[in-house]
Length: 500
Image (cartoon, rainbow, N blue to C red; front, top):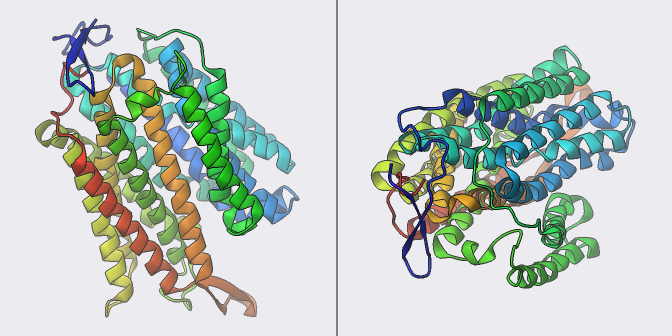
């Protein structure tokens, strides 16, 4: 096996560095058990993002709290996960990725136990925050695969790990709805605690400790600064609709984000051992990949928000289907399986045409899903559950291709010692995209609300067609942006031995 190379983005020179991969000794040995366990860990973490959805309407009653305060059960997980993802990647590079994954799964298990035992909102929010500490596992798992999987199998392994997000997200809704509806909401979190514990045991038994680690001192000042930057950005995005977009608190957070980002970037560029190497992230391949990731994350999460509301809207509302949560989520669940299949196809496309083409193709396929949705809403025929299934599968296929291409593009451009950090930042970009989608789509659907007759003579508010059309149109535009930006990434070969 040839030695790895590290590419200097500014000079275009290749610098050899020692081959330290655990996979280097046997090109034909595939650590399938380790890959399977890492993907299971990714699915468990993805479940943490969706299991809360069926409980949202019931939380005020279950926890005896105000409805406006129970939304923190979602917000806190997002904030903690966004902060933990890049920091976890850096810790993995410095002290060992396997150790970082085990620690993350431990926090997920502890948080799940806290939620299962919670009888008050503060304890429940604490548990949800601890669950958010596991969000970096997918990025860390991809980084571990670079160390242990032979180059010929790396593309498919990374694709499967990336697809674990979609599989967990798609299966999470019916899983959570069924357990919460037929057993209890406490059982839901006990199940999550058991799953994360089993995943941790599997990681300990199958995933080897990999070398090298970069060592050095952890940049606590950079971590504190990044935490402040992300809170000032993501908090108003998630709470702006409640606070009001013109509220001084919302505007103050956005202003604080701009100021803190400038100060944090200035300090990080002058540190010898920064939390995030901004010079590398500023190079064209990584910069464009991360921008495309934001746009793709937006397009992905917009389609997580739109179909479920249409499927659960009463039949007397515009385009409403009237399904309950379990049936609605089962219609959308196949998208996760489609994402899994196309993540493997993405590996082949990467090898033949390059990862940037895969990323662009993923954006195009997601865009086709939105076009079908828009035509279905405005065309002469009515949307049916079959149309919604086709749309969901288009989104799943596009995401499977795009999400598998992103880590491949990252690993083509950074050294082994910076894989965890760079993949963590890329995962953060997707979180920023999904958070922005949540804010924008939520605002548009709320703006378009109309009153319709509900059960028992009550009146309920549901989004009108205009809200869905605007949201889908903006998401389609982000697909175009993702495709154009992906094509602007400098062309390189797919992942090869010299790049692993």
